[in-house]
Image (cartoon, rainbow, N blue to C red; front, side):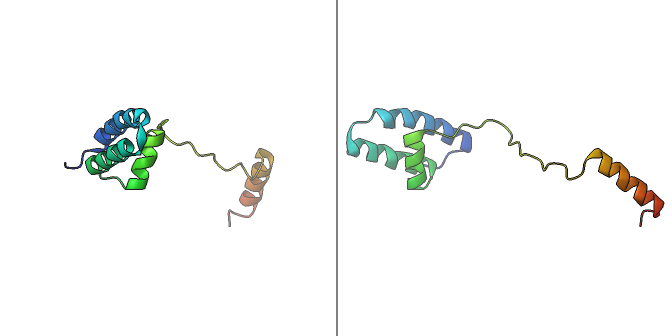
Length: 89
């Protein structure tokens, strides 16, 4: 079988995850893992994690915490006065 697109891989992973959890015995799980690796082209270790735990859930964009302000508004105002007094050197 050829490799599939990313969305297709997610769909395959979701369906195979359910089958993997219902599988009885090591032989069935090994067969499902082999099939999943062949279809998706994933590394065996990563494929086993996906089948065992399911696909990671994407929650949208990642929001990173910004740095806290180093200067209070009063300090910024004082720095502006100093900068203007020195000609912004």
